[in-house]
Length: 146
View 1: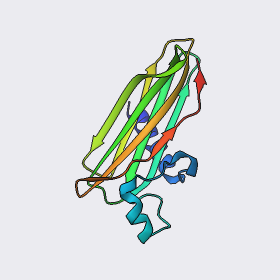
View 2 (view 1 turned 90 degrees about the vertical axis):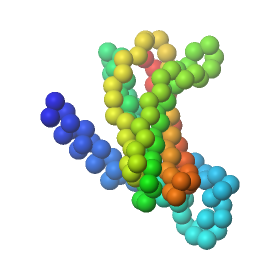
View 3 (view 1 turned 60 degrees about the horizontal axis):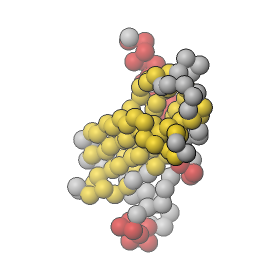
View 4 (view 1 turned 45 degrees about the vertical axis):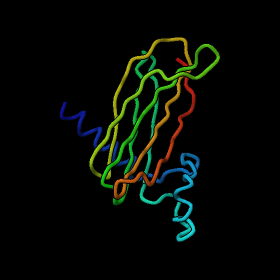
């Protein structure tokens, strides 16, 4: 158990060190436009990193990872939504959230899924500064079939 915790911490630290690809970010909301005019180089006001990872083993074990880190946020939230394609549409299959009164929130878990579907993971991040949501980055994984 101790070894698993150590491995997960090392994995989280490695993921933190890798920069977020631009394709995993969404454009800021209208409320942030004023801030971007002041500092046009900023993509987000406070979020430094949003990560997501999703894999499925041959036994149907889905490994889900979502992580957000914000510089000065007094509250962060990460929400992982596992989507499943059925009836010609993507539907929410399972949702996990982690909210913390700090600049870091994360989810790292395994979940067994049924065979015969396409799956993908959405990771939503939220950061609050002075009681206001200032950032809402988004990540979408590749589609995986099991």
